[in-house]
Length: 401
Image 1 (cartoon, rainbow, N blue to C red):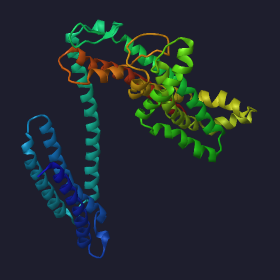
Image 2 (tube, helix red, strand yellow):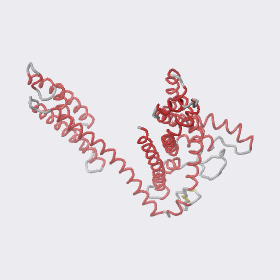
Image 3 (cartoon, helix red, strand yellow):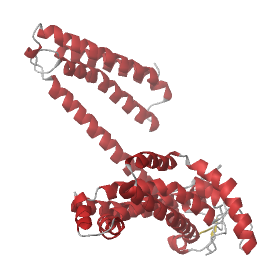
């Protein structure tokens, strides 16, 4: 039996167990349902969970063992039959437990609590696995390549035949440069939009403007990248770069930064809007009562009160910009260089991670393992930004909530 069939059969048995357990509870109680310790619905949930959880556990263990190579693919039907047998046994045990004195509600709450703890554990283990894989592969890379040259080298010229120069400095420069331009676009526009929607817009205008802005967050990044490649890049090249003699390419830092900034507007706007709305109304009323105008109230009372949260929103947007790939690939090019000219093509760490792992690569060569070192570096940067942002937001919440 294929594992997918076993999963489907387990859910069918769980659904049947709910109906059977609820009906049996009614039959046990007779005309007075109050004789039951728990409501019949909880009895149904209890039977359903006892029929569903054991086969899911069996299938999860079987999948992990297959990925680890302990079980072969031919063992799949056997695992499916074992899971189906566990479902039937759980269904029978759950039905047998139904009775007037059975504390079904407590049993369901314990099983749900265990399930929630398991989900939390899976998230933690997954995060730990990602970090450990990056650390181990990065350690292999630094056994083959000097870490000083990697962190302080200013040339990025990977050659799979050997003699590669794998300095991260030009990649880090391009990442920070593009992210800086993106924040220059997104922070003022997003913040001013949040101020308007929270302090000046009518309820009708806000109900239209806020969803319209948040539509930008739902556009796939590949669409933004195509927009940068087809529209923004040629426009900057024809009307700025070539007339000013600053370049002839449609791919540039400014192209990627502008488009990425547009993508980040809803992140800054939505977070800032929520933070500004969280400022107590009493602060506004006090300022207005002392004779301040609405604009003075916003400038001298609301924004200073909301500033820690706004800074946290900006840092979260910065971490989002640093990790962007598709817009950079199509808008900024793939040239690893250091320049102050925003109309020249550059690249970022994420782009080079993709390029180093694309194609038939030898995972024992430094040219491939460098992708893990780049990933770990990017992870540390974004983790630091997220930690700072969460610290600032938490401090803000403790102060005003």
